[in-house]
Length: 246
Image (cartoon, rainbow, N blue to C red; front, side, top):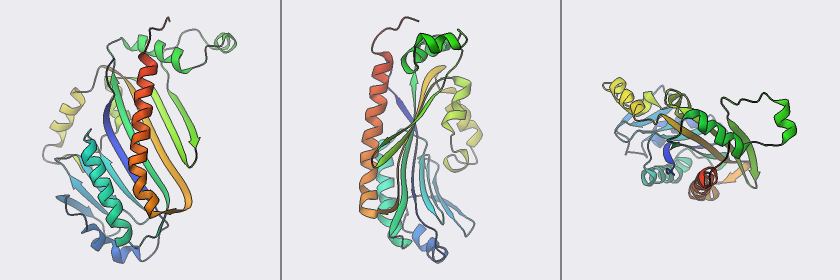
């Protein structure tokens, strides 16, 4: 049984837009000096690090950190830095949404058709009534469902993918995470390393409210990271802990 491999993380805070944002934007962006590259249209700023494959976008109603790597230590460090510095620099007192999203691949040695059969048995009802309604041969599936566990909400997506389909699901941030001079070559190398057959897991954990305290937002990333990590590993164990007759 292969371990899940983290490929993408997206962390975002949202807040109510205010006109004063535009006078504070450049000063706020300068609070984060670890990003060697940047771009602005005077309405927003995107900070970039091509070597570490991450970026931070500061916009009038949200701040979004995105990372295309499995470096969890760096991920947490950069997210916490943004949370500690940007809300005060932008004079944001309350948030209305905090979200933490991760995308994983689990390499599978079985043929794609066998993986589809396993996931179908494990994730979908095998009641004879529903099976008699549907055609007998299942060629592909995607499991997507929204959950609620106060004060959090989850959107979970699980499905089998072929190598050629992986880029569509992972959605690598080419513009902000790869050097323009070497982008095409680097991305080809990245795509070549994707597994031939895999399970794709996408978990978006978020909290929405009219007023989310900043102190609660600062503690959110670690809680969300732990919850997602646990869910992914338990899903992996459930899907492959025993043989399934199909």
